[in-house]
Length: 283
Ligand code: 7PJ
Image (cartoon, rainbow, N blue to C red):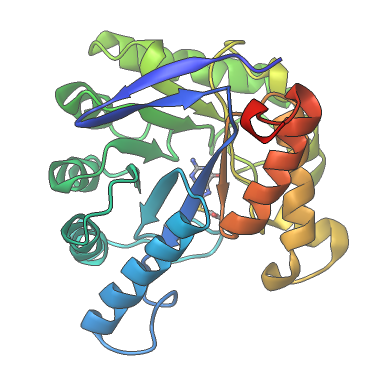
């Protein structure tokens, strides 16, 4: 049912996808996320939060310094660097070996983050925002999570077909600089330029995300596709998030980007045992 993939990482064991659902824990380092004090306090809190997510079973820590939520302010390269770099340095200094992905569409931020120890690029612009992004991935031999976010798409056209065209461009840009598709994880970009119905259509048709057979990341955690459906605020969306995570897993998803690592991981383990049986060492 799940396609399996082994994705090489620099200086780390590879990511093994498909045997077990992987959980990516979200580490937002925007001023509003860990803001109960000064800069030092912010870094300490961010590291503590990363460590808690790792203890809860996170397989990847996704660090981002610019909120891409609708209506959020854009931040400069320098501001974003000022937010994420001290935290990456602190995670490395704390001896954290869990792979770190850098959630940024800015090539300079990705480059610096990787040099400091991040090993995956998470680009919400699907390598189509800046030509240098694919080059940074090539230079450092890191995998890329390429998210679909087409700000100029024709909303009259069916979303799955539109996404296929978009990812074709992404893969061509990557290939042109020597980044093969074995290093790319596709992400349909839940909540980004999609209607409520389209978000659920994409989740329902996840195996149709093309090119078929490539690894897929699902990022639905606390998003408006849950909030608008249930009419509840972000901090009450855990049950809805778990439903989307399990649904996405049953539909072939490989990596799940979430705020609440423990709850989502428990749910995924149960879903996994349902599909494939419990791990043999547990009987
Ligand atoms: C996503 C992301 C997502 C990937 C954000 C939020 C908005 N990166 N960064 N996929 N969403 N790859 O978490 O609500 O869905 S920021």
